Every structure is written in C-alpha cells, then in structure tokens.
Length: 107
Image 1 (cartoon, rainbow, N blue to C red):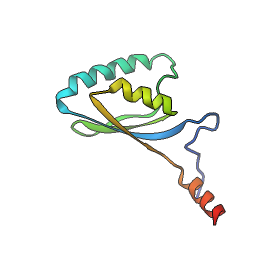
Image 2: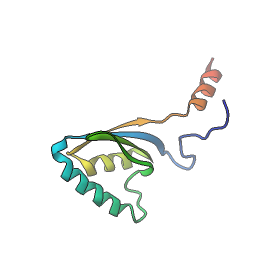
Image 3: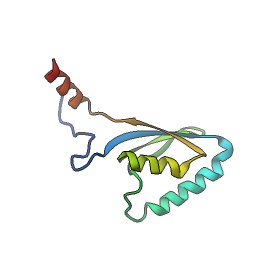
Image 4: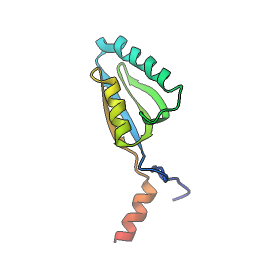
C-alpha cells in the first residue's frame, strides 16, 4: 500500500472533509463579499472555523470545492457564515489504508 497519513488529526476529533459549495449566480456579489470577510477573519488565528488545507477551486460557474480540517462545530459555523447564499456539502475523507486495515482485522 505504501506510506500514508491518517486523515484524522491525532490530537483532536478533527477530520478532513471535501467541502463542495454552490450558489445561485445572481448571489455572486453577496458570496464574494462574504469570501472577502472570511479572508480577513482568517488572517488571525481562530478556532471558530475549520482549517483550510486546500483552498477553494471552481468546478463550474458558481460551484466548486475546498478541503478543510475541523470538527462539527467549526463546520456548522462555516456553513452558517455563508448561509443562505451558499450551500455547502461536506464529505469526509477517510484514509483507504486505515479502512483496509480495519476491514482485514474484522474478517
């Protein structure tokens, strides 16, 4: 399998997630305004929001994704920050090597 690192932070309950986001094109100015505000907030250390591991990238005109690490409270805060203009769906990143190892132990 090769070397790997867990997607779970060993020091906390934080997991890594792909955060897929989308918004209506007519809300672009509102979303961009919130994005600028979030960039300002992130200039100072904060535990209110998840840590960004891979920044936002567009996959379409008004949709994209980023990769974050955080707990359920940080994800909720991040979602509410962009609400109601942006819809965010979180998909956990689960390390395949860990799943395989656990599966083999359960057999």
